[in-house]
Length: 445
Image 1: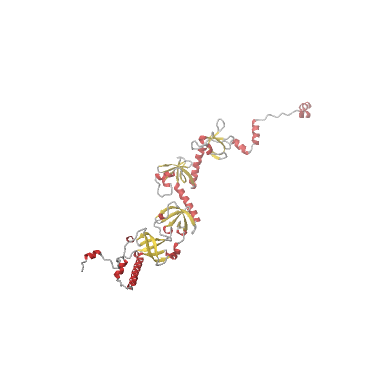
Image 2: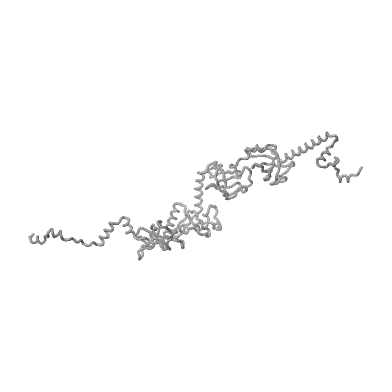
């Protein structure tokens, strides 16, 4: 290379080092790249995340006031729920619907307004979530709760996030559909429900309260049979009274309290002892999980009066009682000490009678003789006839004793005189009183 060219191109080292170096101006893309590098992964995701109209997203409430609700949905700016899109209930204050820090599902109405705001709707999100929840409940046979809003012809309308229908045949646990008038009491109540049918396209939901109630009862029944043991003393509620006893709810399962187990005395009808809705203490006598039956007793909780009956009563003793009731075989008499005895028809009177009603009536107080006591059989037999015979014999014996005593006196007496004296027919001088009418009719000798 020519030397003159070398000299022209060469630059002294000192000159290069002394002149300042001016960097080229940075472009906007370089600044964005540097800013992106300085962001965390969370900040980058928030800055780049977008939402579309109709999208269902979840966010966190950051502020609540009378203008609306501010929600963080993970975008560069928070979304706003107008009051009109917060709830389906009119005039409900926003603070009663959501609170700061609460997670909520919302639907995007407008991805971004001219002011850069995202408009959201909780009301529409609740609606969509409700349909999804109903479909899941139908598929899994889950029990959900619904509020009965009104009675309509043939059933009930309920609020389960959307409007649903419960046919009358699926209300309660009755085997027959309830009449419309009986459905009125359910309005305003929260009831358990099973989803029978969901048609989102036609906005149709059919539910069953009966299936939910039956499932609940079966679950409580299983728990009750696992919990209840023979000999256990528990408290229950009288649910239903029938002629032969009463059904007692003992915590999810009904046990039968038979009329014979209510008292040591005979009970004419269970309603004489119990009232529906009353709470009572009972003892578990038998538990049969196979047949799902529980037998209960009440009289076992009080002392058995028949254990000491022979200390209070003996054969031949005269007792006083009250006729409790009449029966074809005789009469039942209540005795002191919470006992009762039987007077057979043959022991009611010295004369032959066909019915106890010929001699006795319910509520009448009577004296009778004890003929038989059988503590093991809880049985005592009384007799009016034998007590009457005994008293007649005693009177006759007393009469004979008086006659015998009188015959030893200085003056003799006839049996007629003794009898007359017994019945007050003797005169002051000791002579028998005469019958005036007979004297007048009988001519003088």
